[in-house]
Length: 493
Image (cartoon, rainbow, N blue to C red):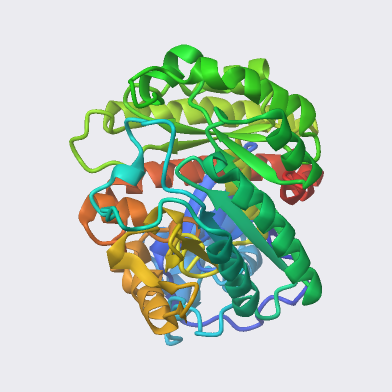
């Protein structure tokens, strides 16, 4: 076998094999790529190429055989006794099987209370000049009293930066992300916070990176110059060509916003060359032509990459992406994945951000205990300074973890993480894709099921199919142009 995400193992194969094997089918996914058999091992996130004897041994294990004599008898007629023993030894060496009397490793628990913070997302305003029909800011978990701050002050932003530095521990690099509402409605606070964060991190010997999300309608030449000069990563919320974009992304009078932003986006792309600029698309029942959206945003507008996100929605909403629309989405993602693979084999970058993110995690050998960094390495800060799991939970009373003035309630933070991890999601423990999913978005679960710690069961089949698509793409690139995989992490630099 040839491991793909772990160094080549030179250790000798076991000289003695156990009489019986323990094998967990939920830990393994077999798939084919580049005309060869592979396996993905969920517990270690290894992608391993299989030689024929090992593939046959794995098939026999999946068929229910566990005893050494039975497995040897099944394999020896085809491959010989020595090759059969070697295949079983390789499966043992890579952790695909274990001696039957060896207890399985426990699922990873939540992090310790000393886990360092890496990112704060500053919701610098909860106001927006648009009224997108699917905006989660209007979700049932969000009632913002009239007395609560609508705009973040300099003091709150600076306290949030100080909190990030204080809680970042030994990390040498931290990130400040600006979000809204519409972020540029509070551009002056963004500007001053960048300067403050640079000065403060320099004082303590850390580096700081910045990113910002905007609907682009309020971009000015001054703002564009500032973003470029300060190497701020920018994500533009845009749903494709005018006909599609204007179906959902409207202003408070119901008018489409495409014509108000497209010229400003082109100016941003022309001037801001210090970082790649990405587009973020929200897919709904009315906006789901992925190939057309991608062609427009990359081929015609000039974005470096595009990330697609199915809308977060309670069941029954008219814009919810369900049923046949989800099946079509998988087909469309498959078409983009094939184009991505072809570009990678030529040594070229492709702008399908969802696949780049998935391939990066596979290449890094990520095995998640939690679906994302919310509450873990990342926290969201509301305009009034209250702190939540992430930007999506900002101003959600149920998920408040403290504030930037009095500090974070770490006991509540780590209690949530303990309840939200794979170790407390039995259904996820039976899924081979758990290491790359871990149950899915907390906010999605809260909107769908009323509880953030629940697994997003409505997406399970889709996620498994998408993850296998990523594994096949990864294995084919690894076989035919492995050097490309080393470029994945540098794409946003």
